[in-house]
Length: 49
Length: 302
Image (cartoon, rainbow over all chains, first blue to last red):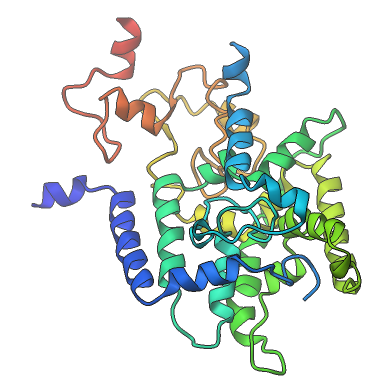
């Protein structure tokens, strides 16, 4: 078991954590929030707001 | 070396920039894309208000989420950044960032270059200050009269937003031109200054200011795609550090943008791309050498 844990690379651990966070984020409506913001002109980004 | 191999990184950078900005119609009409893909972040710094953008900027999305008044943790954005970091690390900076590509092109202009040194190493901490100060803290702390936070990095610094979104949209929309003021002048000034410095200093924005590069730097030592050094083959001659244009202390440390310039400088071929090694079945998924795999020297002998 220890050998197996040693063999699991950090990037894979972080990737699994990332997948969980993305799923939780989508469930709480983050994707729609991102889409709503990104689909409108961001006045701060263009130097007006 | 053939032309494709020689310009491989530039070609991939160009393709990435095109892929992020497939809405060509937007440049002609001065409007931005509003389809569902706008909810998906691209790995590089590419403003989502760029008329061509079909995806979201990770830093812009992170700031927008932090600005929102509901104080909910932006799990989707954090997860997306973690995923890009785990898979790519700062390979994004070297290969997949449109603003990095522009600076690479400016570096090719034959002008005297200011070499890296202790000064640039000190300035390289600036991007972490910007990440925590402007991207994370300011949107939560700096509230306007209506209680909404300020996306300080996008509003006051981001040159990618000015170049990719501000200038094209303002050029195409008369209504926006009437709204211009000191802030736009400031942002254009920041952009011009950075582009001018890029002629003499290699990638100043990426090295000293970019909060996305700062985020990805935390993953650089263990990301799936990165350059690895075969410690058995390495003679510690320092040729890789000499040829590198950024402020690395060793290959794939936090400053390394994974451009691969060091590979050809290594006389013992000790630096190799992780994926190429893995695909050749010489390494385990964690990067360690398989017991049954031949060593580098044995391979060279055969």
